[in-house]
Length: 484
Image (cartoon, rainbow, N blue to C red; front, top):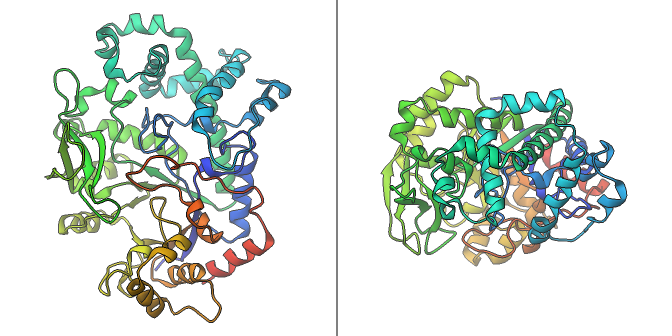
């Protein structure tokens, strides 16, 4: 068995920052130092793609682009692209992320920085050339979207929607496209330095790749042939999951479904390109909804819930065999949660990827696969909870007496031990070779620290870490629990 290692789950957007959302600047570097001081080996982040309506990083206008909200303002000031006094006008140290404010203000600030940027810089020209295969379509997509008051591409003119005369469109939007090139250049430039620093401190970054893409995205607009769409380019089927622990109506995600047969014919080129870009950002990639490669749930367009749907056979191992040929040694974590059937288990076994064990799911049944005693293999990652779960203190407050009794029986809290710390300690003592704990659990936060409640709207994706988190007491606590 390989050496056991631990890490912390914290989205970039949750980092402290005076500019209303976490960024790739000073506080990110300080968090890496914090991880190192706490004896951690991994920093797990959520998808780094841009967000649109609903603010979910799992519904992005691009599967390739980086979130321009994460560009650090102070670095732009340091590089001479913004005046310090001008930048300070955007300081907003709120306790929650206000995406409405960001939407209204951040592009204005970045466009101000772009005015001073040298578009003839050698590194910038090389970046555009190297990323042309996705960047051109993304920049054009965002330019047209902005011109059309951010309406969905399905509502654009036929010329724009069906990409009838691309050279003419690119000439029309050339100035705006240059700004979107700049935004991506700045994101990837800042991020590359941050990742290099993390790796130099012995910290690997675990990224997150949603299996599906949003319908209103550059991905679908620029490659409609990759999806099951009708002649008007509307989805014929959409993705979701049936009713489960999270939702009685299931989760109706609404993403278009891939044309897997076509993708297989061209050796999954879009997927391979996507992974190549992702590995510039991450050392390890967690593929969200891995079970969708074995079998996936579809709902006919127009349904209001995910109750009425059907399971279809997935692409299976063919994709992963091609991935191994083109990207040998790629480090992947399979998010194998939800309805796990024998075909999913077979695919996971065949790929050899580590799966996930979430302890909050363990105590509803004495035979649960998530109970520590039933975690037989070290080839998995154990979590107290994920970004979709309650924080552990909130979960402990809301579980039934029967679940609480089983929790006490299994985890055996020590006299005076905090029950959240007890579950973290239990995670560390399992056979899993890696343990990832959400930052909110180490802080003992209740519902105020929850990142996302699936199938709800409102306060998701807005939690921010208090800038005073880095105390000697917390560092010693994390270090002591991780040493196990």
